[in-house]
Length: 91
Image (cartoon, rainbow, N blue to C red; front, side, top):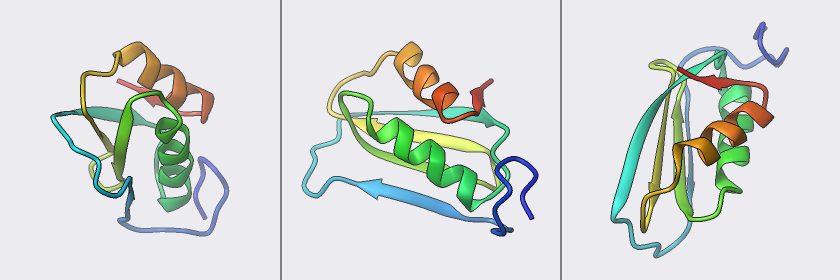
């Protein structure tokens, strides 16, 4: 069982949220804190997907990374706020 979100998902998982046909010209990778399973990754992905301008978000549990893709740069503060609202952090 995951100790961060109490789900039963374990192991390496990548969750990808993609908007069809979204042109991508900007991406950035962030290191996450507190993400230990697919359930955690899903919460982060859902929260970040709501940030204006983000077309695609990927969380890799194994490397504790969040990669966001957009047509133009999205402020780190907006991404950090979404991750924080989901109960996790950026380092």
